[in-house]
Image (cartoon, rainbow, N blue to C red; front, side, top):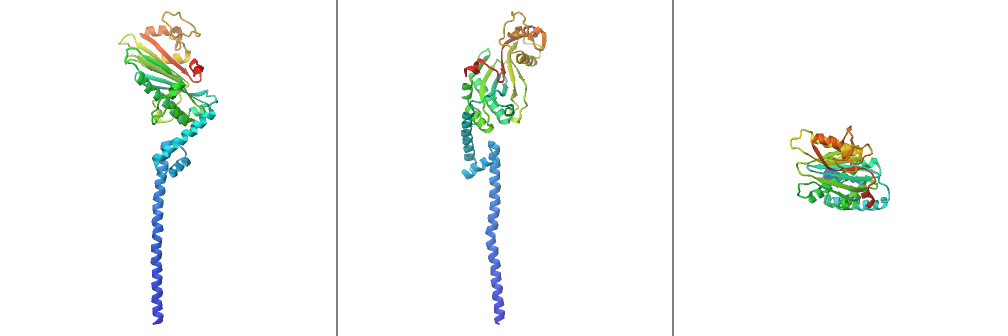
Length: 324
């Protein structure tokens, strides 16, 4: 009897120990599953923050930890830190020469914009963040153009200095371009300058011809409306006859090529005598695509009146640049 009772007691103790193991293991198992879900959620937030801001995984992880995975606060903090770092770098790099960069051209119907943004090397000029800065400068200038465009039957043209353009607001959180410039300097580690911008607006029955030389391909689908290069020009003209059979868009492109290649300084007059390659009045210059005739003669036979033009060359010395 004693042996039988002892055997039953041992069996009960063994069963109790097994049950205890099962229940003690369950919280660990549940905690493990919860931890996996938590880690997956954190990873998803990290990837989302990285995609939205472009900052390193280390900085994004630090921001999420700082604000207990609050995405909005983390993003705002990252921008704030990047801006501080950018302004600091901008101050340190201020004296370094910015002879490279890009001309950006943006056209929107009867308005067009040229901007020049400079950096130190061609390597940075090909970077998407630099091209996005050029795009923001062009978009801000276009918005300024639309706000200033007079309701007249004539065309309007204006230029902006570095100080004027960097105070324009961008489409990114309505920040001034100066802030976007600081962020780009902080991200890319080179000195940069938003040097100048120009815009034109014409009546609906007039034309703006555009041309960019040394064109760089846009490195992102978001930049497809922009044209980037080392030289840029636009020209304002209108047909003298409503039923002109001339391809006016192609004519504008050819005039833009001439302006980039021949570097005229003024329009001149149809009364000016034909000049040689040293001539600076556009209408008297030999036409780049047909040197046997002048630009004035080419336009006369095409039935087109040339009104004005603007030419930009990246890094060129200009009176405007000297005054900034």
